[in-house]
Image 1 (cartoon, rainbow, N blue to C red):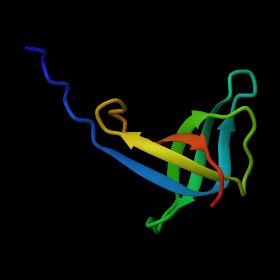
Image 2 (image 1 turned 180 degrees about the vertical axis):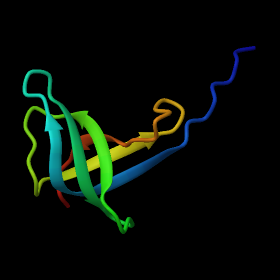
Image 3 (image 1 turned 90 degrees about the vertical axis):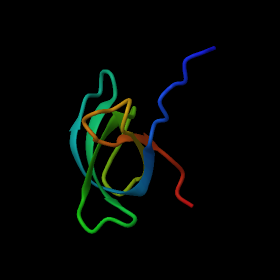
Length: 80
């Protein structure tokens, strides 16, 4: 019998980038502050993007088991 993997709980956030706190142009690592749907305050997200700027739409997923820090992992998405 194969061991069951623990189910990962995740939350999907989508919103506008309010501020790019940090961006490394060499590897794309970035720290963003986003105004996410359903959240009163800005949310911090980390991820990778070749280029990113305030006003862009992003989608971020937080995986509690894969990311114990609880900081959402961002990826750029298309605005719908």
